[in-house]
Length: 79
Image (tube, rainbow, N blue to C red):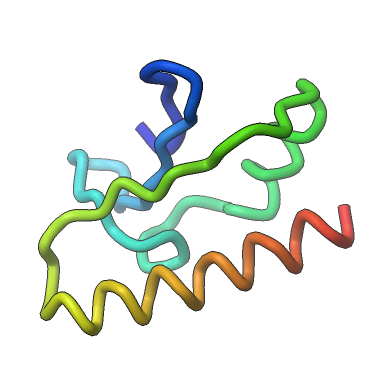
């Protein structure tokens, strides 16, 4: 699942459509601009929390998460 709810936050991560990979957004094949547009269309404006797996070194995963956050912010600002 690219987006699901557990409590007040929505947990997000990427994958390749075969299993729950917990990849940094944009590292799999999810169409994030379309997904984020859908989130905006339903009026959700609360927390999107990256749920990431141990797919590399901690520094590399954190750097990827920072890049993904900037891209999310850019997409949401221009939607």
